[in-house]
Every structure is written in C-alpha cells, then in structure tokens.
Amino acid sequence: MRVTPLSNFGAQDLQSTLWRLSAVKRCHKHHLKWRREKMEKPASKSARPMEPPSPRTALENLTLVDADALDCGVCFLPLKPPIFQCMVGHVLCSQCRDKLASARSCHVCRAPMDGGYRRSHAMEKLVDSIRAPCPNAPYGCATKPAYHDLQPHIKACQHAPCHCPEEACGFVGSTETLLAHFTTGHGWPCTTDVRAEESFHMELREGFNVVDVVDLDGAMKLLFLVMVSPERLGRAISAVCVRPPRADGDEPNFYLYGLELEFDRPSRWHGDRQKSCFDVECTDLSDGLPNADDRFQFLVPHIIVLPYDDNPINIRACIYTQIR
Image 1 (cartoon, helix red, strand yellow):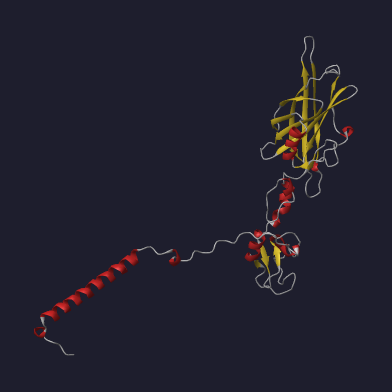
Image 2 (cartoon, helix red, strand yellow):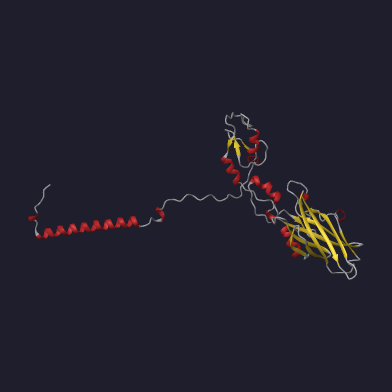
C-alpha cells in the first residue's frame, strides 16, 4: 500500500481529512450510546418470554354416554382414588385390588401381571375432574361434587325438597325455604334460636307452630312443626320433624328425636302441672301430615285452658336428638 507523506498534503487536504476523522469518531460515539441505551431499556411486551398457558376453564354441556366407564370393573361402584390398572389399562378400585392382590392376570383380559396392578394416575386425575350437579340444585344446592362423591353428598344434602302441609298449597322446597314460607307465606308463629338439649319456652296457638332448632354440634338446622288442635276434652298438642328421607331409600327416621313438653299454671289455691316426653316422627310431608291417631298427643284439658280462650298456651319444651 502506498503511503503519502504528510508533508505532501496541502493545508486544504489536511483540514478535510481531520474533519472526516472527527465525523467518524462522532458516529462511533453515537453508535455506542445507542447500543448502551438499548441494552438498558426494558424489553417490550412482544419481546418478553411467553408465560405458561393458564389452566383450561371447565367444559360445560358435556354428556357421558357410558357411565360404566367411571365405575370399577369388579364391584361396579364409582371409581375414586387410588385407582389401579393392568398393563393393558383395565381399571379397578383400591378395595377390589386388595382382594385380587394375589392374582397373576388381569380380571378382564387375562394379561399376565408379574408385578400386580399398578396405579393409574391419569384415571385418578380424570375422575376427580368430573363434577356432577346435585339433583337438589332447583332447591338451592350449588354444590358440584366429584362423580364418585355424588351419592354421599345427596345423602347429607340439606336442600332435599320437603312439602308444605297446608291443604291446597303446593309449595315444595328445602327446609330452609320452607321455614321462610311458613312464616312469611302463611304467617305461622315461629320460635327461633332454639338449641337441642336445651329447654325453651313456646307460646302455642291453635294450628301450626314452627320451631327452628340447631342440633348439638351446630352443623345442621332442624325444622319442627308443633300442631295444636281442639279435641273433645281439651287441646291436643303433637309434633313432627320436617326433613327429607335418606337418598338410599331408608326411612327418614334414621335420626330419633324426642320432645319434652311441660305445662305449669300456678294459681292461688292450687297449681296445674303436666309433663310428658315422647318420640317425634320425621317426614318430608310428601303425603301430607301423618295420621294424628298414629302420633303422641299432649292433651291440655279444658279445665286448664277453656274452649273459648284465645290466649296462647305457654309451654316449656326441650328437643332431644339421637342417632339410631
């Protein structure tokens, strides 16, 4: 490469060369500043790393064509974790797997199994994700239990429907809605804030009287109807517990309730005192009120409460609960 001595440059050529070097230096400086600002500037939204996809929302309006696909292949009960399968994929529940622990072949395809049945984690995830609406949803139950927990939920659901005992009234609803219907729809007197096993006072009038009771552990409310009807010898007092029957078809009297009534009217010369304790029948009132002759009746005689006396009957009561 030929190099021209600096002495051969004229003044004008030297000035031009220095100007060009200065321009290159400025460009290089601006370029370094631009790169530094670009590195310090936060990345734009489009340049940010992709976030993991969110879980898929629940799928609605699905139909299960073959419900047997969710049942154990041995006992035919709903599958629930832990679930086991053979090498081919035939599933069974934990209890049936324990019964077939010594089996060396599948109960369906007879495929050999040297290590026995193995856990089916995919099937466990599937059955836990399948939710079924409670059949009592029209009566206020918003619970959607897993398919394998549906029947236990139905047995304990407090929204199962009961019926209004008033003639020509077709109201059907849960005990919670029945309580509101009794008090607002019919205006029946109601005694609230009652706890089981604790005595309380009631002012009973002729007809239906409502008692709202909380059981011993406070987990469940009980609805009692106390009826007062005129009889030849006085006023007859009887009671029923309004609750739905069990979902497995058993009688609703799985719970045994007792009612203790005590009437005490002191006077100047002598006092009138009467006390009885009797069992209370449970009913959903779908067939109306049980026959009065088939249930205990606490009789307050006319000598104590006159036939034309419209004043309420003051009664001390206590409700007992016991599981049969």
